[in-house]
Length: 332
Image 1 (cartoon, one colour):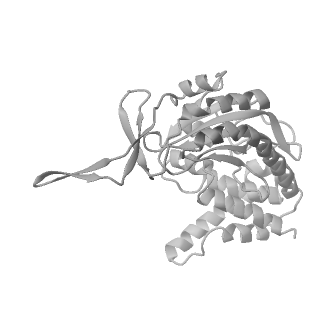
Image 2 (image 1 turned 45 degrees about the horizontal axis):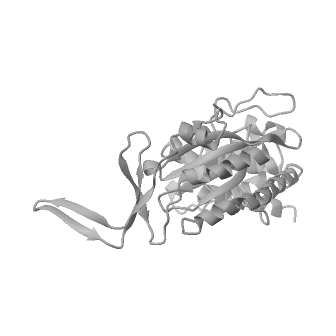
Image 3 (image 1 turned 180 degrees about the vertical axis):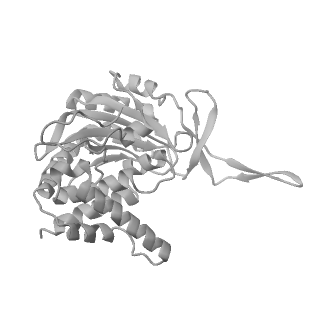
């Protein structure tokens, strides 16, 4: 599945054949009618994640094998849903409590009943499923300026490697280019976190109360995006903001990278088909930066590129949020 749709009058041309991050990382679960079905289809159920409280380190050298006990080290382990084998996931802290993916089934089903959301994509990535997501699509297509289409997703993100809490997010994907519209909007809550602690079961039960708050973020995104669409932006203004998102080059190699990056960003702002219907606006400027970060910036693999586009933390989301805020500052 790609993000392509048949172009209609008044819309930008779709980026041909470009998959979004969901399609790169996940399995299609669109036919699932329940969370249990969705998790089974994506091989995310019955992992039985548990903690090993004492880990041994083994070293092989010329004198033989040395085993060292590590009593202060804990590790998460799962049962591989396909092979049935035990697999190491990651090292975790002393307060870490496993939260099974299956524990979120009732909440996912509740989302579907109360919002009309349908299952979309789900998958695990990182070492032995250290990170995972389950995405649902809301029925309403948001149109910025009545024509720039976005699909809104309700998504469960989580990890078993100690890198993050589990959390429910709301956020859009732009259909013209497959951009993950990851931004932090001041005063609007876009996620509800469930820590890997003993309080996790209580937090899961309370997530129902957070659903309305997450939908407030959707309204804030639509409002702020329309403000950017109605804000003219010159090439000079765009270049100033875009260049500020990265450190100033200090070496010849960094200068070359800077010039290559700015050339790509400039081309996306001025010429990309994906900006055709919004050209010359702050909304086009922000989407040009997002398109570069999601689809053009260097990455060691398509999987790593997709993972960083979906992430709520990290350089990609920080730069998107910084750019978003700077475009608004132009109107102050």
